[in-house]
Structure formats: structure tokens, C-alpha cells
Length: 77
Picture (cartoon, rainbow, N blue to C red):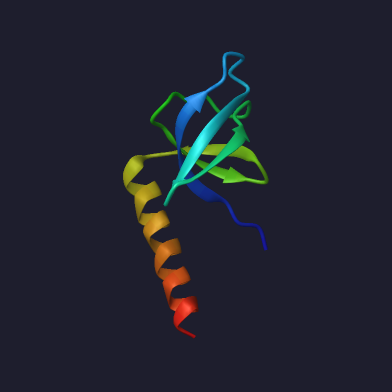
């Protein structure tokens, strides 16, 4: 199964090849942004270290909330 995770672009390098994505809860990672046109503040779907799609903020936040809900459920088991 493949999984893409939404996150917010908070930084872009000077070559516009990589950006720092904030997934929330203080989790930030460097991702390749060469497949999409993004600016700081955009939300993207990230798969295998690549931003593969730009999302609107509402959809990204709904998806992140669902991931948090699934994680909290798995911790209860």
C-alpha cells in the first residue's frame, strides 16, 4: 500500500529543488519539490520524499485530522 501524507511548506531552498514540510506536532522533513509548483504556505501531499500534489488548506487539515484520529485509536488498542 502507498501512503501520501499532507504537510505545509514552511521553507524553500534557493535552488527551488527542496523544501521543508511541516506535518504538525513539531515534525518537519526535507522533501523534493521539483514535481510541483509551490510557495511557502502551500500544502502538499508527500510520498517517498517527493511533493506530488498541491492541496487546498481545508482538505490538507481534514486529512491530517483523520491521521491523528487513526493514531489515537491505535494507541487505545
